Length: 124
Image (cartoon, rainbow, N blue to C red; front, side, top):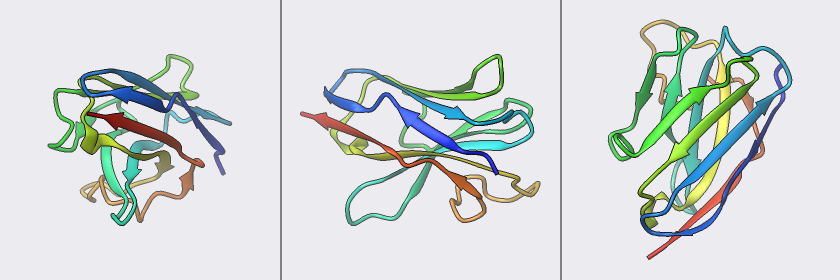
């Protein structure tokens, strides 16, 4: 089982940027990796995912503003967030899982390993 630890959250004004990191306890190259977020009263939603071939996909709400990537050593996952908006305010989690081909990678349920989360707050 892979242990995950997120960092990099904080408070910024609208239009600002943050870079989230997720440190894994082992090699993550064979996993599907994702960043998810959950605001109070809302369900957890997928933001960005990257598969074992490093193909990235994004939720429509963040497309063009967020970039997901893996570190070269395959033990770190990143989320570069630009042009942040107040509606991006949430707890952000990274997750790993072996997701079946054709499955919805933005569905949090199949992901087996989760970090503790890092808070992102965007003020207007």
